[in-house]
Image 1: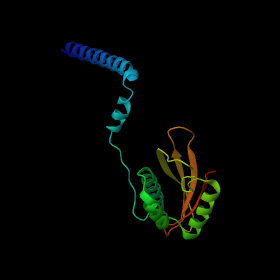
Image 2: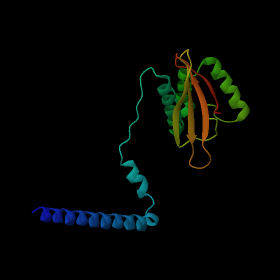
Image 3: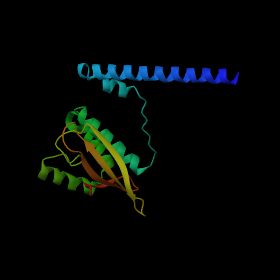
Image 4: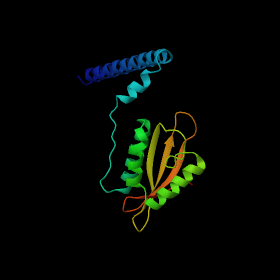
Length: 169
């Protein structure tokens, strides 16, 4: 009986491997064949996967991410009169820094928060360091559909005010 059971297991394993290879090859050919004809299908498949975004109340890193997300959304939504963008700036930016940022924008003809003249398609916020006083420095990476990503160093105080936005080193 041992030999017979072992034989059935081997047959099942071979059948499973054969089915897996057939399915894998079939999907590979199907995906390869349909890719040039329907390039829009790949993003739909990726969008079907569940994603998670989390944050913590009172956390400076979450505050920086919230600011950049809302600020970019406000630009994307064609904020009439820049009302939301100005409200976000007055809420998150330190007043002295905000004045310096406006001067930088006049001189450089670009948005000082994004350090660009256009709106990025994606962004990530990564903590770089925390000071003993509780300030957080983060690297904000802005990515456009075309062109190189821009990395910014953003510093937020424990009072949740951004006091610096500069090119990351």
